[in-house]
Amino acid sequence: MKKKSLLEIQCEHLFDSDNINEAYDYIEENIYEIELNNRDLEYIMMVYDNEIISNDLCMHLNDFFVQSDENFDDEFNYENLDKFITKNCDRYKYVYHGTTYENAKKMTHEVIFPSIGKFVEDMYGQEYTEGSLKECWDSLEVVVFASNLDDIMKTVGAINYHTKNNYGLGKGVILKLDASDFLRASNTMYGDYPIGVEPNDYYSENDVPILGVLTDEIMINKYGNYDEIDFKNHEEFNDLFIPYDDFFNNGIN
Image (tube, rainbow, N blue to C red; front, top):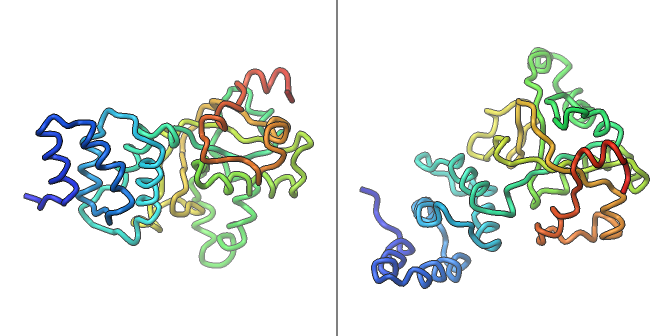
């Protein structure tokens, strides 16, 4: 039997005393004060199994996933942690993919297909198309890349790369996608993913439905530029997206 952590012991005492709200409050109040271990995480996932958890707790659990190399434990399943975050955290229900206005207009089935985009090809192509690694590139598994809101600048970086920083003129769009359609790379499995996938990347080898489109015009009308976006306010950000049909049929709003 695994040894119980101090967090688990304290919370079990509160739950047993029917002080359920106090138990949740204890976790929220102490989440930054204690050094979480793997047992703590397993316990938190158990008690919050069917609960939507606060934004602060979500971000703290996500930090643990991002830092998985520093908290490595052979017995801990980071894939389960990612599934829990996607299911129980409103902030992490969606992920985002940056592309050009022109490319997005071609997605007539409201689906983004796995492909080797210009950004990935230029970033990794030379490394993997010469010498002994050419075979790796030739057998590359094409994927759809995405990032969550904490890593949204990866998405913005892809747009800037495609548009040469000339966004704001009907050039770039952000696509909103369902995080549950993706796998997520942790540091503990680095090297076991398709070429180009790095720790904390979301990727899918399947077609992914598009849930919404954010054009650079809409974004600039709201924030002025990418640097002004309050990415902590996930609800406000997600409300800016329009249905793909509206984007495809009407273009810029």
